[in-house]
Image 1 (cartoon, one colour):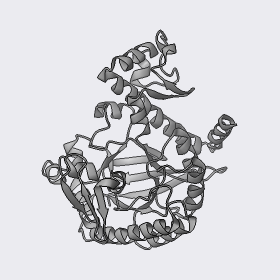
Image 2 (image 1 turned 180 degrees about the vertical axis):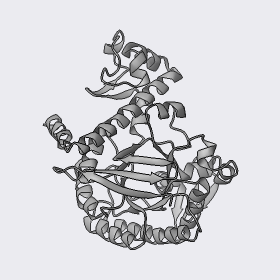
Image 3 (image 1 turned 30 degrees about the horizontal axis):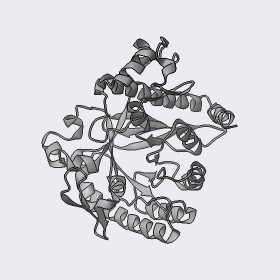
Image 4 (image 1 turned 90 degrees about the vertical axis):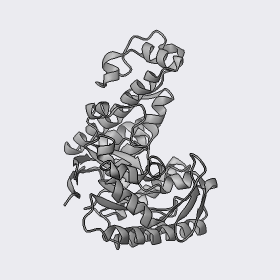
Length: 371
């Protein structure tokens, strides 16, 4: 069996859980943050640097890899792990969010999604079955069902229609996945329903009857206010099975992650640390730093004295500012290394606090900051 999950413990003052995800490419301690490697690469970072900061699992994207270089090419070259020379775990997003992101280029039907490539305008069609076949060809350790992501705001009628379509697609994904004699990893269903608690409940109930290996919460961080997102999570997470991994898709800031962990979420991903790094916004133990600010022009201190990443061990704020202002490629690499290290180190500290039954202190710090 190449996929499994076990809950190892939990925090007494919150719903935070400590777990272990078993995959064919190694075990992953949870809660975990998965850096986004959309096109089989975390932008600006060589894999050696990801290994340096003990990254155990990456997220890659079915939609982008299908368009370029194509799953057939990757399969002929030995699968995604061998193709990208990464021997640790990979989760592949189904591409539903990317189809959603290019709404002007797509048309949905019961059969699937017709769309034009954002690269060259060529026409394509993805069905739930096709998306499963692509992820099987890639050899993902964790695969996701194909779903429709609703925008915000969204009427209840539209949200219900979209959720129902996603559930029918999930059924087809599960059936196609189940026809394989052996599969490389686990398959997750995705809870939809926009901001409507009863729709989220109905979606969860239907997915539970399909026999997935884990459940994800999708359709958030699409423009809704933070308090609305939190309300949806508070209503949804308790409905998810205790014995299975819980994945919050596309979220988010360090504060979002901490609150998600407190509610019992095990897995997170977001482009924020890498995208912000390329734009010069860096996360530190003392808060966010905009490295372009003139205040850092002659600042010889490391970016974050409490960080032991390659960037902070060697380079000054002044040098990082110079690289960013000069438009040097190295700026993106050093900044990304730091932000990814910050997130992964944060998750390590969170796991340690759950072991010590002291995770509640993380929430106390958040509350003090928001006062």
